[in-house]
Amino acid sequence: MELSPADIDRIIQMAWEDRTSFDAIQAQFGLTSGEVIKLMRAEMKPSSFRLWRARTTGRKTKHVALRGFEFGRFRCPDQKS
Image 1 (cartoon, helix red, strand yellow):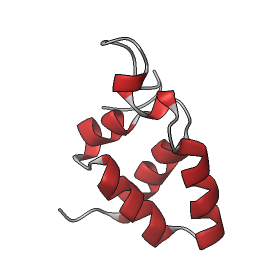
Image 2: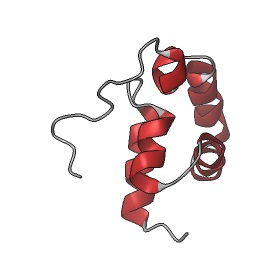
Image 3: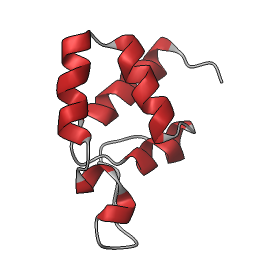
């Protein structure tokens, strides 16, 4: 799947947000968490990527299954689509 520069920017923005889960990114763009990690590694400076990975690894808010509830919001009300 070919992503536009705008899509890549939006994926990076969503991945940086602590409350946006990888499932939300997959629902909107079709990328798995592994693909998001690869994209972040390719698009970010190594030091920024390491900081992001340290912050997201094991974080409950980045994985819907770890949140403790089956249904819940994963989009900001201002987000389109």
